Length: 398
Image 1 (cartoon, one colour):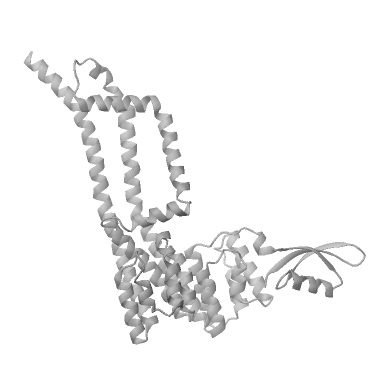
Image 2 (spheres, rainbow, N blue to C red):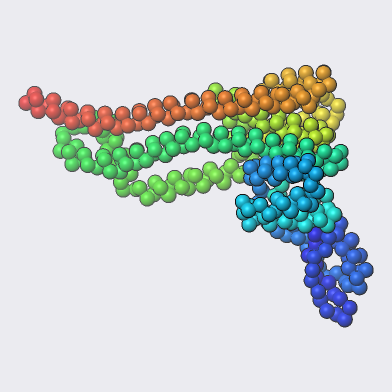
């Protein structure tokens, strides 16, 4: 039930303000009318505020503590109160938890209170909690949600950690080249100008060095512009769709990306389906956790086929971007009547494979970048040494 901030006219013409829970503005009008007040304006408090989504680590901790406290016999309201009193919370997180507790105290279900926070909690945790409130077993569902977000946070952390070294190496390559062209090469300019002729490679290097020295500010501005252009272009759905499509079709890397996306989807689907949520709702939620616009777009047809009575394994087999292992496992689960167990097992296997895929991507990137750096530095050194060696040779002959 939403919480409305209102302005109303009290008997005698006095204008009063306040907040009140109501199903909609009509209900709010009736509630105020029963208090001899006339509604002037109203605003949904949750929708009028801008919130940012909680991180996966916080969602995992939130769900884990709720599951643990409720399982030990503590009431939900008291559990939420204990959560909001945690000293490690930031002011923003404490504000969110207190607002959820306040709404639950007013009789609003926990899932609705979380949904009213306007984007703080993702649909995955909201729907799983809602299913648990209907069927019972909130503690088990909360712990399952905690496990889901813990694994997702661990996977994201491994991706971030694995890509840190290639990023540093990339910046190092750019930095070394900039120093060589901007500061080292100009030191040889007077020497090279005194020579009668220079090798083509040296002439090219001197031209690049002179260009960098004269236009370094423009080059920096151009690089920043290119970065911002790429950043904003990725916000355009058609561009993002095309980039994500190319990503899974890359040689070597394409299959590794598929493994990561399949593991992410399978874990989410497993958590949702095990909580008793209808398969169509599971697909609608799980599609938004994949992280690839090209694959997510194909779920319009998957959902339509599933609603038409097609088996889940057959519907998912048409998706370009998943590994075949997912469809084979789901088919076995459908035939044996243990789809939830099969999804759990497959999710564990795919997560192991995704970790290995991330390690393989880094194993490909690191030596490739080292080779690129070696080629660049080696070419520069040859361009510097070659004319000096030629001059010494001429001196020796004379």
